[in-house]
Image (cartoon, rainbow, N blue to C red; front, side):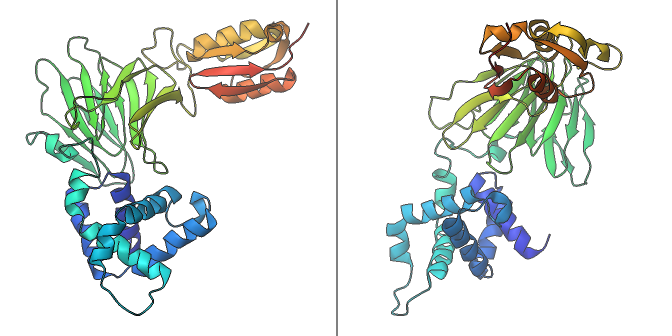
Length: 363
């Protein structure tokens, strides 16, 4: 990436709270040179004036809004720092200058106040003896841990892990995104530390990543069950947000702005085995299970619930009397439901971890 793209990337990392110490220093060097003041100001004004969608702006709206919020929240400090001049400075230049100065003079604030819940940064809790695997390629890398667990490390991500785990726990530290297939061992919990949160499992498969648009951390479960909670090693206070339990085809979203967890369905639910330990495949899943001939919706919904581990609720019990004929064996879950609803004059919506079917039903 060129210098302008690098500057924008570092700015996004700074506001999202994911920036490393080295990146923090690099960002300050860019700001001190004032090379990108105009770019910063134009983007902020564009977001404020037009409130355009993310795809139409160089910086996501939540980033520029937080920058402006920080500037005006620290108005008293910036007024004493900015030089007094009789020349009227254009608004965008004032914003750019204030942004740069605010960030340059607030490196101490960055570590102490930006994460008021933290008394240490994430890097400080990673054991110095851990191995470090960085994926600088454009494809995922597979890492085999000594307990038999596999980690599918996504591009531009880093995993810190020991040569061998201790006798009580299995701990790894992730920066970026990865899919985990954890070997089952009830006596030794597997812990994934990822910035503000910890994912605790005994044996399962799941993905940990950060949503690039919102900056929220997401843990999506493929099989098994996981517990997700705040990382108390970084908490400044004794209180912490209550953790959540996540089951197959669900995801926990940690919103760092208000330190809250939200559990919802994944974007593309997959069929799961009855024991929830492994996904269904060509050996244990028969597509004919989703081929119907004048079948009542009550039976179809019951089968879908068992196949995907997702509760399906009907708004009107008369819907159970409707019948469906068709082959939906090759469709994903949501396409299956769309086809069924189209033929029964109904609709569906996602409510948290459940699916609600709405319609008048059949007599």
